[in-house]
Image 1 (cartoon, one colour):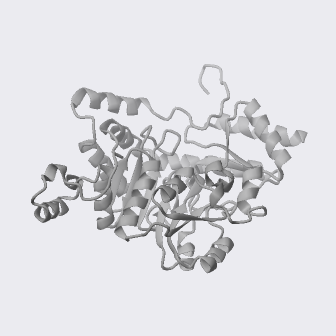
Image 2 (cartoon, rainbow, N blue to C red):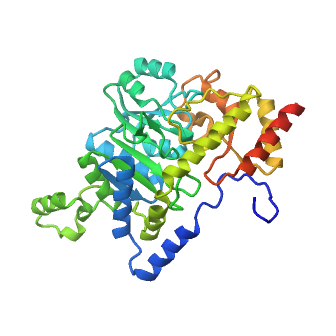
Length: 394
């Protein structure tokens, strides 16, 4: 502990932008006159692809736009039709679901499990029987847990698989990182996640055609954004259109900026080390809550813990514990969206009786507190004492 008085606070994320990060950004500002998507973005994309273990990556404005870009490009590449079905989890972030709807596809919602918060296998098999025409399975690796995606592929062997790794950077199965088990994957580098560009995200793939489509769609659909060989091909095929303003697909402006990439390059150097700290904090947390009979049957192997989830035994316990922690400077949040099908904008999509579902249970009795690499031993000791005191009194 420092010489100054220790004040306990447990926010969702501590100030994770270091002096080194700030110096990198300041030096960049002083030495450049280009701030829009340029050489630093390309460098960041290359370094990210190397870290993840893929051929191609695109740095975009957010994890949410990454989801939209990936689904839009997948729809185009495979000529999916409006109304084609996409399997999605009942608990994930809303921008996993919104692009599916916005792009004219039909979300089919699957229950989640309590071990890794991804698809529930039993319900997934039921859906496979009722909806054998599922075209896309969009897997969420939630809260830093690794979803068993290879098991899902056996249930839907003919579907296109996509991954949202939003907040699970570095989660892995047998050393292979989440985001490398499918056609394409997305990540968020929002401030509260494993590494930050403040706002930003990635979409990654090994598929050249998909990459080329996404590269154009990221920038209005312009041909000049395509890979070099494809750009030459488009020019030859369309000699009557000025190549600088030739649009090969519909598109958007989902680009990010150079300074965000500079920050990301600085943060990426520490990602693996910081992830190990997150795992250590999570292990300590599980040991603490396990003493009191709370749910601890989590998928520990391969996690890159994003948060510390409480799954209480009943609603009353959840309400009292959450209030107690908030009163003692511990910031809390629901388990992601909770049950998405009770959200106002999705009620019309539910035909599933979720009264006895896992997602409804988690919605009612679950919440989380933050996990990050800046949590100290003093922080952990105070949190453990708070939990001990709470369960000693109830």
